[in-house]
Image (tube, rainbow, N blue to C red; front, side):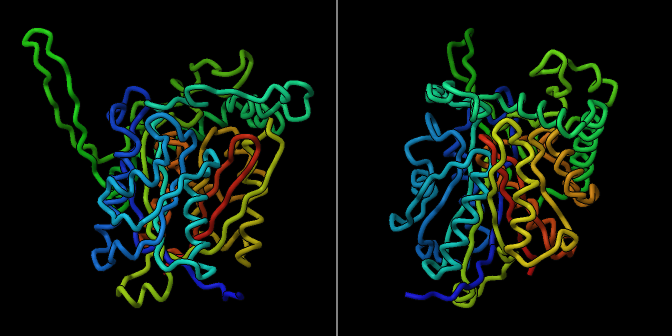
Length: 399
C-alpha cells in the first residue's frame, strides 16, 4: 500500500537535570525512574492528549543491561502510569540512541503507521559503567587490523582525531572553558527552565549510632556539571587521560553522567484531534559511518547527509547542538565543515553539561526545541559522533 509522507511534530520535550557520575546527586536513582520522571513531565505538558492514543514508545539506551535492561522502555511506560496498550521498544546506537529514538518515532508517523508516538532516552553511568558490566568483544576483531579501532577506547580515538586534524591542546582547553562559561551563563539566565523537569532525590543514609536509616530529600533543578571555578590555568595543568604524550584530558572531555529525556511526537491529524500546539517539526535524520579509530569525526559525514535529505544548506541552521564527546573531535568537525562557532552549543555542551550516553540525543533535542522557540529561530540540528565509527544528525524546524 502506498503511503504519502506526512509531517511529524514535537508537542512536548523535556528532560531531567543531568547528574555527575558516579558520585553525583542521581547516583542512586535508577535509570528507569529517571525515564519515568521525563515521561510523566512530557505528558503533563500536553494535558489535552489522551495517553491511550500513544501507540508506541521508542527509547534509546547505550548499555541496556543491569538497572536499565529488560526492555527499559516498556517498563518505564508502565511505571509512568500509561495504559497497557502503549508498547515500548529499547534501541541502541550508543551516543545517538536518544536521537535515533526520536527519528524512528517520527518515521512511524511520517509513513502513516502511527499518529502519536513517545520517544526518549535514559542512561545511568553511575549504575551501568561504560562498556557495561561484562564487555565481550569477538576474538575475530584481533585476527587482523582492519577494524581494530572498534576496540579502541573513545579517548584514544579522540587522540587520533586531534593528531590527524591538528587540534592543539590549547585549542581543546579553550573550547572546554567556553563550554562551561556558556552553560553557566545559560543557567544564570534561566534558559534551561523550559526543558528541565526538577527531580526530587531521596538519599537513605544509615546512622550507625541510632541504628536507623535517615532519609534526606533534595530537589535537583539544574545540571551538576558546569563549574564556575574552571579556568585555562587549571585546565592546562591536567594530565593527558588516555595517552602519555596526548592532549585529551578529563577537562576537555565530556563528563560521565546520569539523566533522561522524553519527547512526544504527533501527526497533523492528531494536532487537530487533540487541539495541540506544535513546538517543532521533525525535518530529517541521517547516519553515516567513518573508520572506527577516528569515530569522533562522524558528524562531518552525517551533517551534510541530513542537510541533503532536508533540502537545506548549512547556513540555514540557526542552532547546532554538536555533542562534545571530546573537544578534539568537536573542533575537528567545526573546522572541517566550516561551522559557525557562535551557532554551535550556544548554551554549552557535554563538556560542561554532561553526556549520559543513550539519553543525550533526547536531552539535546529538548534543549534545541525550546531554544529555537525562545530565540525565535527557525532551523536547528542535533548531531553527535557514535562509537565504532559513526555520526548522526537530525534537523528540526520551529513552527
